[in-house]
Image (cartoon, rainbow, N blue to C red; front, top):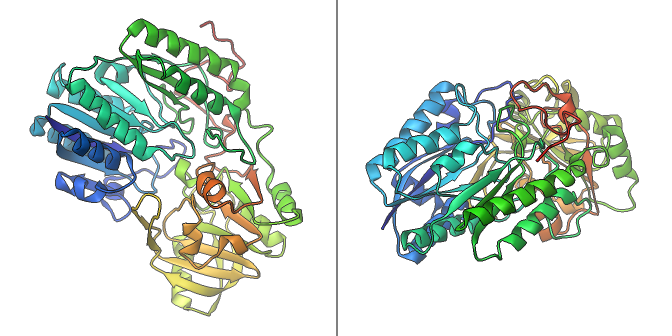
Amino acid sequence: MRIGIGGFSHETNTFNPWPTTLADFQGPAGQWLVAEQLTRAYQGTRTVLGGMLDACREEGLAVVPTFFATHGPTTGVISAAAIRSILDSLVASIRDGKPDGVLLNLHGAAVAEGFDDPEAEALQRIRAALGPDVPIVVVFDLHANIGPAWADSATAIIGYKTAPHTDFYDRGREGGSLLARIQREELRPTIALEKPPILVKSGLMSVTDTPLAVIKPPMFWLMSRAREIERDPRIVNVSVAAGFGDADVPAAGMTIAVTSTDPAAGRAYACELADLAWQLRRGFLTDLVLTPVDKAVERALNAPAGPVILADQGNNTAGGSPGDGTAILDALKSAGWPDAALFIRDEGAVAKAVEAGLGAEVEVAVGGKLEPTNGQPVVVRGFVRLLSTGEFVSARSREQVRMGRTAVLDCGDTELALTERPTSQIHPQYFRAVGIDPRAKRIIVVQSAHLFRDAFEVEERIPKMVIEVDTPGITSPNVHRFTYRKVRRPIFPLDDCEWPH
């Protein structure tokens, strides 16, 4: 059996004013992989595609690598030229490969010019190219906005079960193993979808069995029940997609997806989980989660012990921020540059630091240039302690991380890492790569909503406290700060509504 493997991944924040172009996919921070390039890039990695490749090898399935593209750190709406090229490349490579089955890694939250749901468009085109009998199994991100069209074209869909995401590889392997069972005619799955009217933005989706400083229970309880349901022999997979409320599209919001061999059982379980989500919906409100910037810095400075992590919710680069928010930087300056470390994306500031050279004192206006709600530029004066290419290999995924040229300024006791590209400091390696020991700092600022928690808290147990900071910016979890034009209405919490389900 010959299995086509491919896909594309983009988590689009439609409030990001900067588009994602073909150059972003094909440039040094993105990926544009054709045929064997895909295998070489992902074989042996702890990724979705790495899991698919391993599962196919173990199941004795011949791999036909097709096409895969991802965007690096650029998260604005995909340009028409880029999405046209992606769809054409993916569909043509799968059609020409004549596979007996297909494994796709689709993020699920992409938005492009002309397509509110480009993943659904890809699935429809692939199905049309292959006909009705070739099985298509999709692995998607927990932050996916899934519409009914997915179930019309895919044979099975499998979503991540963790946030922070720690099961990429496991879900890829699950997809490969499931496709092997379908090919051996051990089962014929069907998909049941339910979409309770709940809109969730970044930072409110944690799923963890670990007693972290803040556990947001709705996704925890939903995923726990989903795992219980999977014990039913009729059930193949239960996925709870929290959705991606940073994308203003009709399919935005939570989705319950149950893949089963018994359509009636799958539908019943999907309805049960949708009802449970509706009952738990108020747990997604931000009131008891976020702390104002000044209060957060004050709490961190007065904490009995450090390090204290300040999670910059409005400047979450993984969720779509360009990475140059200045609210916490400004508060640290006002506090007299205490013992802290943080990252800001600012190409111009990096260039000035590079021009000045190691050891030089520079004064530069930092951040606040790329997104109008992110704050104003902050003038800082500091000494250039480090200059680097900003590249390292992730110890977790085994992939190359490219931050662009990087400069670290010592501003009093605050270490400010300036990068040319946006970064999401989801593990301590980002800090160590620029000579900062996160264990030795009083305050660590991460431009991350929740993905940092696994590495910082569970693996290395670094912070004594985590404070989720209510910063301005396009990834603020508070949906009431944004104007939605395409999201289906009524939907909670934009509307105080009932759901007659």
